[in-house]
Amino acid sequence: MLTIGFVGAGTVGTALALSLPSEKYKVLAVYSRTPSSAQRLAQLVPDCQYCQTAQKVADAAELVFITTPDDVISKIASEIDWHKGQGVLHCSGAYSIDILEPARQCYANVGSIHPLQTFASINEAVKNLPGSTFALEADEPLLSRLKELASALNGRYVELKPGNKVLYHTAAVFVSNYLVTLIKLALDLWQDFGVSANEATKSLLPLLKGTVNNIENIGLPNCLTGPIARGDLGTIDKHLNALKAINSPSFTTYQELGLQTISIALAKGKIDDDRAEELKTLLKGQDTK
Ligand SMILES: NC(=O)c1ccc[n+]([C@@H]2O[C@H](COP(=O)([O-])OP(=O)(O)OC[C@H]3O[C@@H](n4cnc5c(N)ncnc54)[C@H](OP(=O)(O)O)[C@@H]3O)[C@@H](O)[C@H]2O)c1
Image (tube, rainbow, N blue to C red; front, side, top):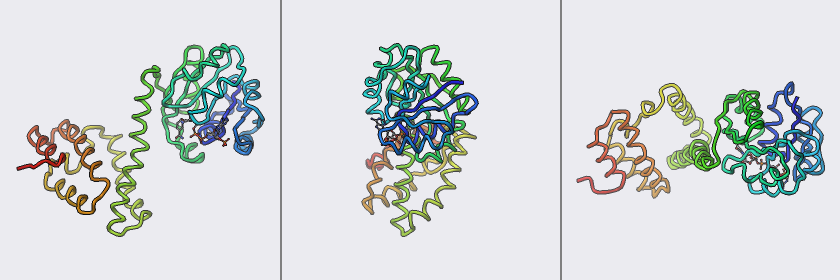
């Protein structure tokens, strides 16, 4: 049984604490900047104690997760007297384990485990976590422990080198955060023809889910449908004109995403190089004649 502590009782810390299987992991200590955050986590996990300092968590647990905002991880790591051989983790997707250098200097084993999942609320995160990928960075023996931990959370893992982390996290931003932005842009257009955001969301969700199903079951590039996949210049021209007519702030996003979509359509084989050039010219706003 591995003893676990958390410094930072926010969404990720609490969702992980609730998801770790109790037969293998004993979450026994938690500290957070605001006592009520730590107390909430402590109440949700049987036999978990709320601590008044981060040091008490480090003194109690074999493996400590620092699940605070990225900007304070390094400072917290430097303020604690870590124990030799103890495991110290962060969950940031963009930072390498270098920010845990102060813990390494105390001869702790440092690592990072980034859940490639969106933690918008504790309840939803607990539901979404099984099946997620965890990006791991650590040396042995901690690396093996992290692989076991990912499996215990019913997840899979990838090992990342420090130099790869920022691009890895940028990719996650595209898939998760900017998908939210795309939905927002679509909802704004529905507002323009008088449908509430709530109704528009309900209407667009089956399309979104169908697209995700096609990505999963058909894969790129064949999952791409729509006017660029078909090479329908006239339809795209109509879209551009309609966005221009309402002075939509999504005009340039439509252009840029359209340009990025042409290579997928080419790979699918439904358009040829000539049609791809025509699409590029149209989307760049150049004269097609
Ligand atoms: N959100 C996601 O989708 C997601 C996904 C993957 C990884 N991550 C990573 O997970 C980590 C935590 O993110 P999160 O979304 O859980 O953030 P969060 O919900 O904001 O939680 C952070 C927690 O840390 C506490 N805290 C702040 N400063 C502190 C300090 N100096 N000492 C102790 N506790 C402090 C916060 O304050 P209070 O005690 O005042 O409540 C809060 O409870 C980050 O490294 C993030 O990059 C996030």
